[in-house]
Length: 286
Image (cartoon, rainbow, N blue to C red; front, side, top):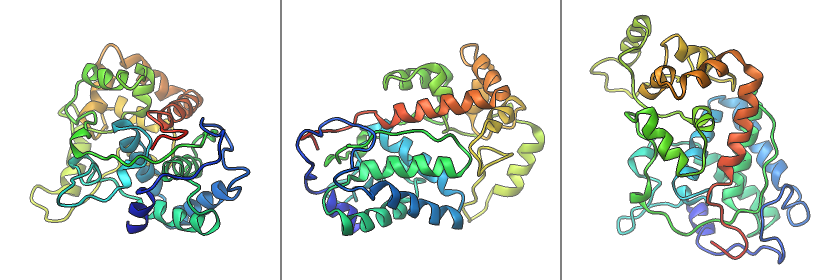
């Protein structure tokens, strides 16, 4: 991550008059930027389809805490503990994808394209490759130079729906957008007994390994609405998943998404665009 650390250490030189986000921000200054990101993501996706989940996780952890400013990429030191190694971020992966895209772009357009934009573009294209919706994202974000471990305060695994709703509302998200985006938590007691047995076999009570289980049991490598069908059948892996199906404020939304594949695609696209605009730095900021 040395390259990322170096590039985040100085202010990016952007053309005057381009202080706001817009689609095609780099069309004149670095026209190959988006295609380079797409090529890197496609190559990685062909080798490992789980990168879509990885990038979605990175994008959420990145934007929800301080905003979409790439501060999650800054490496920590003993004297300056940053948010990258904070406990909620220990499972975040895919940093090498951003590194690779940044390295190639720098060879063509030095100090021009922000890592924050690369994360957003990489996530958008990974979603598309996994069968999700295609949506436009504005670019022109600048990278932040501040990253603090004590600021990492994501919705927790034991949050109630009302607690999660307050956390998302603080970032400007509606309940429907929260149900679309929410994806962290812990196993629930109301889980289908057959799934409980499967998890016991997979994870083991005293295993020294670190196994993982997909939150979407049916189509883990595809962006679709099967997750909602699964939690309605009490096959959600996380506590908050199952609470969404029984809480009066969210149960109707979950039921709708479970039946409406097109509806969740549009809601997902809108929520992702909104997430990508949380706390962005533009102009001379950063």
